Length: 458
Image 1 (cartoon, rainbow, N blue to C red):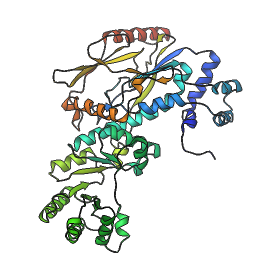
Image 2: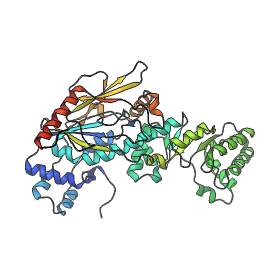
Image 3: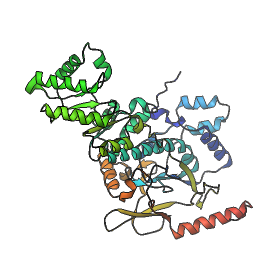
Image 4: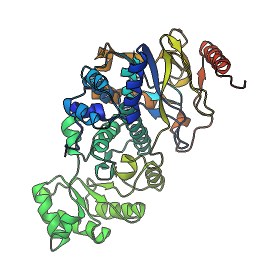
């Protein structure tokens, strides 16, 4: 049985079958002209007022590396769908196209292209599935993380979601996305190795339970890791705090525990009681760290209740973006052989042609509105789509390091209108318009398609 782990060498088959059946049909019919596809989100989830674009780095890595190995071609040959000439042609498959994209960490809105691919149609078609997989997921997680970090109001947020993430790739890429959006650390050690993200974590309840007494566990762990965070809720939270205080008295100047972690119960009430106990014992420098089913809503409630919590560990609800676990993302043909194309299906109409997004900024430095226009327009504001790949190779604009992306995200989020940071949907929503030229092109193409296909007018 082949290994289930996905590597660069095996990524070509990380696609939907219909991409490959279309490729053979394109080849059979001689359809090989350049095509332009847009990847965008049709509509924001009800609980989101913006998205944070993420996943471009993995997209570009894939596009540079995608190849069909002999093993992949042998497997495709067993399906009985593909002729030998087509499979032999796949041996030389390379992505040779151009990609324009908004840089990672940029805030985006519904219907705005996050990236645009232009390449011979077979190349642009094959990569759809992988691009949607990576950009959709990572954008969803980065967007969730931005809300969580905002809710914490400057307190550090540690990402603890690996064990509940939907697979190991999701855990790894999710850790990167949360770091971009402002989280302070991750529990995922591999993410620390791959991306250089700070890793954090100390002990689980099992460590406490493995000792005959809670105090014994605290004493032993603090001896090995003096500046640790002790988990105090295994049996009774406030009794656990009392035992930490007793340990501090026992160790005197050698006591260096940084914080206590509260992981169950009424976190606000327990944090207030624990803070009072620590302060009365003279342990004002020992912080309180909270976890347990947290998200931006729970964190907001804790802070508004006056809970003296210094940091948060957020896992399941962050790593799965539990309130909005999927985005209505699509990858749609916008042009073929130099001609604009569009979809007319009700509720899923697309905009034709290559595009640019122009972002206006108000006198206060905050974003004031976007316009989606044609690629050759020059409109007011800053153009968002930049060329990140040319002839199948990254440009300098496609080589941002993680520190630059994280800084960009922080700047972008700071420049959003304040109403967009609310947990409820912004009212009014952020304005995104279609330029007069793009609107005219849309109407022209739509009318031509209705005539061509004898469709009723609208």
